[in-house]
Image 1 (cartoon, rainbow, N blue to C red):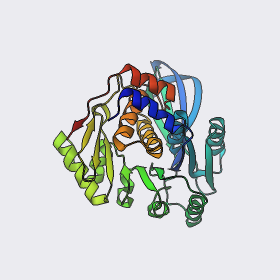
Image 2: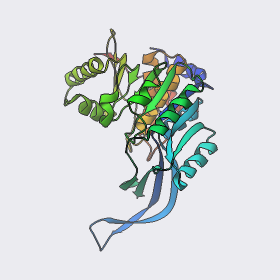
Image 3: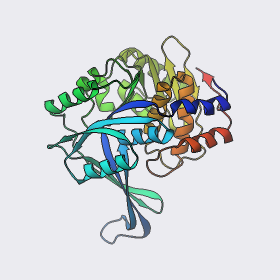
Image 4: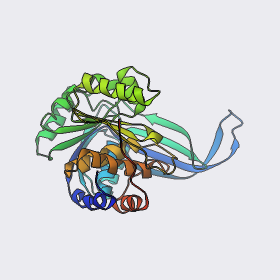
Length: 327
């Protein structure tokens, strides 16, 4: 493992690195307000909405995290021919994120509306279409991927909305795939460079229950073998993350988070940081350590968030490097 100063210096390597991000794009819609009473119609709080905001969600949030760290993401995904897609394009253009959105006439853009009252999430309302993609859309995706090279790695952000399937993954065979999985598509994943499930996804994908460190190790080894993975990173929330590597020691990275307010988007930050660091030729443990610091910052904020280089540097400087344990 590198020293703190070396981790910070290595962030210079990330600047300007180009990286393909492919996956389910969505629009995060927030309604912010105050709660002062309970509804007379039902036992639920009444939120007086004071403002509304929009941000990039799903694979869009992955791309936003890469851009914030100084990388140059190329975002590829599918959206509907609607106002929500146009809002996503505005956000992408505002953040100067290169993108290739494939428009479907038969699907709606995925929108997640979160109502926040007194700084607490009250309810989430989802609008989405999770049906399989039309064959024509799959062909368009493959052609877009083949247009140009994107370097050694590609990030796949699967939210189970239809973008990621066996055919999509087969078009990425020339890349080292770093994938954030969804349980419903676990059967589709195989022969990947790195997969980054959280504990719940690891449990559901392997049909096991994790209650101890021993369970984590056995579950990780089971997934590695079944999916023929080169590497596996299981994120454990407050307990940090565990990295499994073929023919190497398993490593546990304790969390660097000081406070946890909202885990929304934490997985996006992990895969974004991992991917752009690997593209910048970090070692896998150093990429994990950097992602660990970035995720620790994100969970301390409400809503999806992106960590910029300056804030990440300040976090690394102000904290001791967590001790890495071999399991």
